[in-house]
Image (cartoon, rainbow, N blue to C red; front, side, top):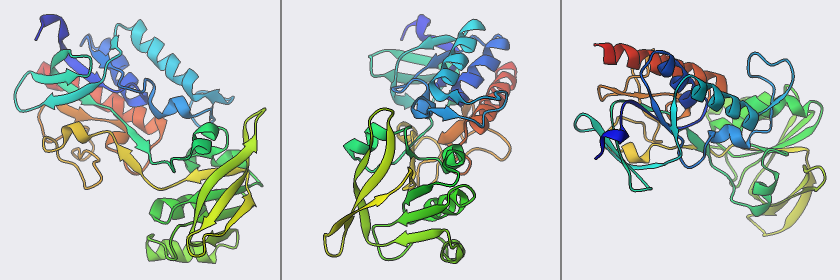
Length: 312
């Protein structure tokens, strides 16, 4: 343990929540250290067109927005370190955190903004078209598919909700599910069945995504039927993968209260966790909205609450 690695406030994660917390904390003279994590910028770095972040009349790019937040955090004095925490001890103060670079960090207050990662299908072609026709957020990208055909993959509440939401823009929505029944709530299933824009393709999985190279764009998906092993191609302009998210919270298991999916619990109207001095903001605690703007708002809340906590 070295004095140079101690901070009054340590922020884990470099998405909208982490950078916003850093900006507010720096302006409050808390001299925060922000550890970027393994994916600097978070999920926004794989989001190309952003049209719903307040303050920008034109479409902006996700990576560009995160660069702007990083530059602002640096300009007000945030110490940004490219490192990833792999082990934590929240049982005593100061809190102790170990990184994969071998460094030990300690802090008086901790903001966890490690985010959540969308679960993907695991296809090589899927990775190729991420941000260019393949998305995990209908709320973010649905507007770009006005009067087009889209595919939604999944069978739970998220998939049902996204399919219904996309009918506000798309002319046709095909819901692809690998089983012969949905896991979604009955009321959502009824809404799906009643919506004439939605077609459900049962017992099927996507095995390949086909598209154009220049510019990158999705044109078709190859489906394999789980019953008879037959394959077919269907045309689509976009693919929305809705098979769930995984919050980056495993290193806090058995130390912080969380739900069965791993989302960290916070007090009502607060970012406080069950451990005094530890706060959580952004998608690591949000299984509902998962938007850059709500994450940024929680980052602001966390920084203000840390300022109050440290002053006491």
